[in-house]
Amino acid sequence: MPSPRIRALALILNGDGKALLVSPYRKGAAPGAGRNFQLPGGTAWEDEPAWEAMVREGKRATGLALTPVRLVLTDFTPRDQHTYAPPAIDFVYQTLTVPDDATVRLPHPDSRYVPELAAYKWLAQHDLHTHCTTYQAHRITAALYAARTGGCAELHAGRPAYAHAA
Image 1 (cartoon, one colour):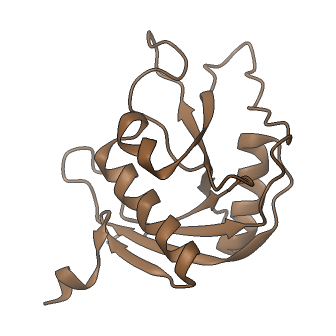
Image 2: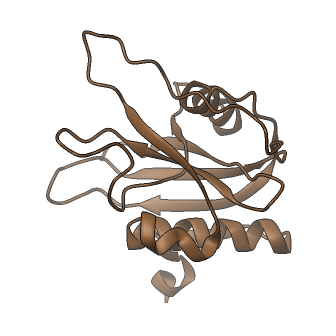
């Protein structure tokens, strides 16, 4: 049984309480079109703490120097039976609030490769279902709630974890 991948994501809020989301590049799709926005971040390296991976991957994805404030969400995703992707544990960290005039810079694609990210948006919670998949909208909503209340949400495939423990 493979060990779960550790992924670290950033909940980056601006002064208006909007979350910074990124859209992966999709061949043939207009940049930023559709419901594919998600939290920025990526996979931790071997022996790298999740919060350090969030800082590294968040900066690579957005160009912003991020400072973690606290863990607001964990999400266990089981092995995908269709794609055989290994299980993953996602850690979402709230960062210090970013000034409204902060400059977001997506990674500049190397001309030899397809760009990883196509667009970014600052979104309010009520806009998530318009720009994100249902799974991502649920996860981001849970992270926003935990950030507001001082809690830490625990999810299993994007849903409250303890419903699966019964």
